[in-house]
Image 1 (tube, one colour):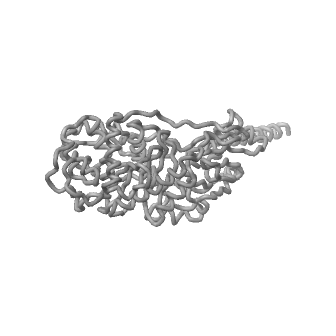
Image 2 (spheres, helix red, strand yellow):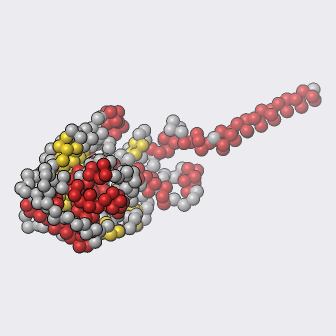
Length: 462
């Protein structure tokens, strides 16, 4: 009898030990992995109950609010900036970039998350305030209605992004219901063309070429061009952006967005100096920006065969509208390129607004004299060149309009321009004329001018 009890006790002890080992393995060793699984119902329920912080425009207008599981977007026109948040499909835009702040994780001390779980306390996120001006953002999105393209408007010299528009777009309120159709849509409405779209700059690159040539004091700026100012790119002819008279100088070609004469500058600069120009202007590096960006990976294999392609904004160089916006700001700021800022301030739960400074530092890419020379040519392009559609009554608009051959052989239109306190870049896909891009650019700059006197406080009151 005693032996049977001993064997029974030993059996129970072994069973309890095995259960303890199993619980320890699954609860401790494999616990974090199980909690992180997407199909863990406890994690999903916990995520749904987070009181996610609000995303606000510069004037305090609410752009995103609600629990993580019930996110609302009162102004869908801000989708290219705000992005979306979905329990099922993840997040994008500011919702993704500032997820830790909006969840509240960024403001928690070590151990607070576990303590909240033990005490069943509600997790509350912080708020994020953007530099975006609602009126300018809405106007930019309306200008792109029915088109594919992007618009970026930036304050000068601060580098605050006033509008970041991309089209076609989507309604973040219906992201779960529309996901499959959005992903399968060949127009790529989920792609933020302003920050992640890469395009041939075409004649828009002339702003860079002219600035670098002035800065390096390249000879031959007044050298006449004897041939056709247009240029074949593959099987497509890259035309001038306007209808010029006689092209006597490289600057004349700039005024009308004519590509071929810029090969003179490329030959005078040489491959090494042109490669250095791409690096100096920030084309071969990632941008310090709140949202993910794309750029051309350098170095480029520049030689005699590829030099002319880069000179006319074709070849291996691809740029994003946000990169070109930095160039526009630099030309408006005496050659100084500032980092761009999209998020103005964050506010912890029950706390005060904290100003966000942009990553990166301002840097001079060309001299003040060189920037002024480019600005003078851009002013003449608006007054009597290819960018005349950007003219604003009683305002001194500096602008440049041009075309580029896209990968499919179609043409894209660019406009890059600025006033004293704002810069803009407009890209229109599949557009055979640069005039619409210039007209949109002038129209948005006029709106900025009208709002010039509006106060822009540094933070919202608590």
